[in-house]
Image 1 (cartoon, rainbow, N blue to C red):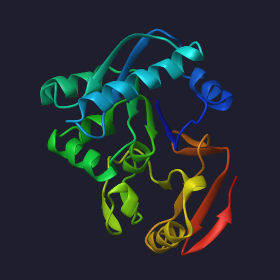
Image 2 (image 1 turned 90 degrees about the vertical axis):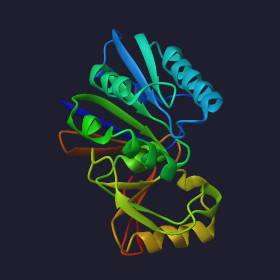
Image 3 (image 1 turned 180 degrees about the horizontal axis):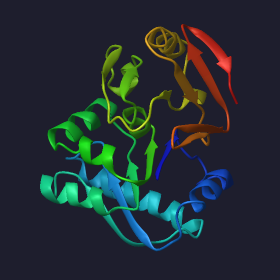
Image 4 (image 1 turned 180 degrees about the vertical axis):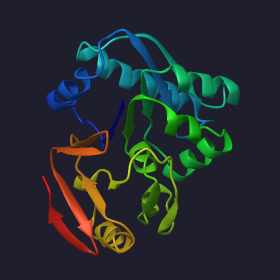
Length: 216
């Protein structure tokens, strides 16, 4: 079974809804894999890995082992880690840099074919789409609207941190929505997809052909 969870961010730790959804499919005896956004940014990767693991621990969700994919391990080892992981966490950070590293390491087919739980946060959630439509965001190193092949785990596009988007970025999101429907997630909201069935938790807006609609 493939379980995909697309998140924006959690301002005060994981929400009860997120933990409840996760506990339907995970039982505290598996392995956790953190995939960095910048494979060369080791100190930031280590800090965020520990933060995420602490968020799990604070909710009583534990792992027998954890691994990190960045340029400190080989491509072969990275592929083995993906095959063996029960939960994979695709990090937030630099969206375009992350997808470039995943393609360079040839990891996408392994992410596509695996069973289990895949969780994206922010950039990681964006890159989970089959065809990514990424709104311009100068503040996030996205100089122009970008459209590219993503990881291909889910069929939807998201825009994270909608609660923090200014008026100019909302215009950029509406422009991007001319090319694909975009789900704008507030922090603490998430979308869970199990066998192609979509369920939205928390505040979310749908942008379709520049029209903004409340969906949750």
